[in-house]
Each structure stands twice: as structure tokens, then as C-alpha cells.
Amino acid sequence: MTKSQVNKLGKEIRRFIKEDSLPANDLLDKLQDYRTSFKADLSSVFKDISEVAKETRNDSITAFRIKRIESILSKLNRQPTMSLGNMGDIAGCRILVYNKKSVSKLINELNSRFKVKHYNDYLKETKDDGYKGYHLYIESPINPNKLIEIQIRTVKSHKWASMVEIIDILYNLKIKEGQKHPHFERFLFLQSRIDNLSFVEKKEVITIDKKYKIHSKFNEVFIKNNKKIRMDWFCHIDKENNFFIIEVDKNKTSNISSFESYEVAEATYFEKFKLKKQSNFVLTHIEKPNFKRVCIAYASYVLINHEYLNDWYKIAVEVLNLLIESKDNQQAQIYQNYIKDNLKEQLELLKNEINEISEYKKDEAHSLDGYEEWLEEIKEKLVDITKVAVDQTTDTKDRNRWLSWLKG
Image 1 (cartoon, rainbow, N blue to C red):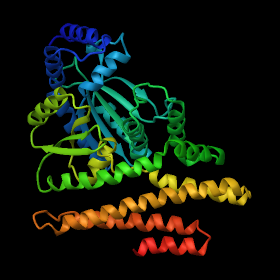
Image 2: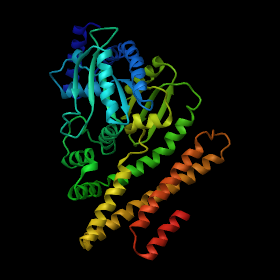
Image 3: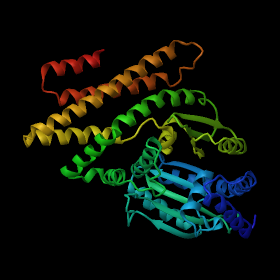
Image 4: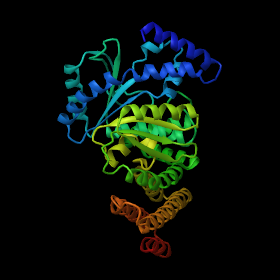
């Protein structure tokens, strides 16, 4: 397709969007052809990017994806003056690293290897919502008329970005796409500077959490999905598949499928989209995939864990202790009950998960690769939660009750 044909396609699609309806199938077929035309360009760039990332830091995580059809339609709707041919992030790569120095090194190396058309530096000037990252838009080595986006983030910044998407999915919102929600927007902004919050801001985090039951909802969905995703992953062990479709259905249940070839994966993705199942799903390629890499790179689709759960323990207990020190007994009691109720709920969910996977282990037809690691991970969570509960419990009967939870 020429650029003028692409732009014409975008205009035709917008007519349907304005009428709040899904574009006709022939337009979707053309859009799919346009999306997949980036495959060769993206594969060529990704190979070089993976080498650069590995040389910069061996534990870096690299992935690529072609922009989801839903995301293209949404962007055309949000930015009515943007032509489809000028949408610079149809094809994108992402590099995640564990420290800020690696980000700078990557930026310098990528600038020297590729022809950079433009960039967005959200490190020097953090976005108003709290997002941090660096986006390069490079010219494709195969087709100079096509751009490839490269996102570079620390794993910590990526976890924040994942949280925005997780909240959108769990609360049926579209904050990432610009929907306004003062409480969640404030909550996410505070999360972006979690290490530098004042007492008042920490209390604000817990107040918003309590209002919307964020910690509780995260735990409920994560623990439910942990079993499902682990079992899905067992099916991929020993396969050399690098392409994945990760899906969250309308019940907030995650599913993962792997594919050996891009062509089969992309055809499956397109058929899923046309079924209109009200699911969120992404097709991605991950360099040297393992369970941990997939879960970090696509936390908002896997939905089994997030750093916020650990941050919540720390912040909630700090707020409680400061209330006790200031002798604000009424508020302290409210926060103490809130913490205990959340911890009890999580303990119940984790114990149910242990019982379920114990039954799974008894079935000789199932592979046990990765089972022991899974079980140990859950037991460690149980110990950590009980320690938090015991440390902030002064009543002897309550303390013994928490300890009995752990032993049981």
C-alpha cells in the first residue's frame, strides 16, 4: 500500500468510528494487511536491538509487537487530525533494563546504529501522569518510509506503566487512553514517586486504596490467574516458541498461547479480534522467553503480580505506626483493622491456591516441571504476609492467631 492509500484507509475507518461502530470487514482486512506489512522491517530491527540490549546488560528484556487493531482504532479516534500513515508506533520494540545508567548507554548506542527521525524524552521531562521512559522513532533499514518505535524503560518504570493498564482492565476504565478519573489519576501519580512520598501522601495512597479496594482486587485477580497462567506455561516448556498471544477475557482471567511462527500467530490474533469477545489481547515476540521475562514484559496481560502489593504492606504499616506514635488512636484502629482484613483475605486465597495445586500434583498426567518453584513461591508469600501481621499485632491472642495461620 502507498502512503496515500494508507491515509485513505484511515479516513474510511474514521467514518465508522464516528458512528461508534466497528469498521466493515473489508476495511479490517486492509488494516490487517497494513499492520503485517511491518513484519520484515520489525524483525530486521529487532535482531540488532536484541544484540545491543544484551551487550549493554545481560539481564535486559527485549520484546516486539505490532500495534493491536483495537489500539489503532482508539488512537484514530483520540487524535482526529492524525493520518494513519503518520502513526509512528504501528511497529514497536521495547527494551527493559534494571538501572538508569543502562538506559543512557542504550540511547547512545541506538543513535549510532540507526537513523533516528525524532524522539520523546520522558526522562528529562516526566509526563504529567508520572510516566518515565525514552522513545526513539527510527527509519526502517528495509523501507525508509516506515518508522519503528523503540521504547526504553527501567523495569521499575515499566511496572508503573503496567499498573495503569492493570487498573484500566480491572476497573473497566481507559485512563491510558485519556479518560479522566481524579482519584485513580492521583493514585497513579503518587505511585510514580513511591520512594519519595511524605506521610500525608502515603496516607492518601492508603485512603484511595481503601475506597476502591485496590489491594484486595489485585490479590483476588492475581491469585486466581497465577494458577491458570502457570498451567498454561507448563504446556510451553521444552517448546522453542517465541511468539505469544496473551489474553485477558471479560472475566479478568488470563490465557497464554505460544506459536513457533509469526504467520500462524498473526492469523490467530486476527481471528480472535474478529470474534469480538470483549477480551484484551496482545501478540508479541520475546527474546529468549522464560516465565519471569514474559510476566515482567506483559504484567498487565498476565495479571499475576505487581510490585504495588509489596509497597502496600510497607506504606500501610508505616502509616499505622505514625498514627500510633501521634496517639491518634481512632484512626490507628481503623487502619489496623483495614490491614488485618486485607491480609486475612489474601491468606485465605493463597491457602486455597496451595490446595488446588496439590490436587494438580496428584494427577500423574500433568508435567511437574516448575511445580516446586511455584509452590515455594506461594509459601514464601504466606510467610511474608504473616510476618507483617504479627509485627503490627500487640494483642497476644491475635498474635497467636496469626501464627496459627502460618503453621496451618
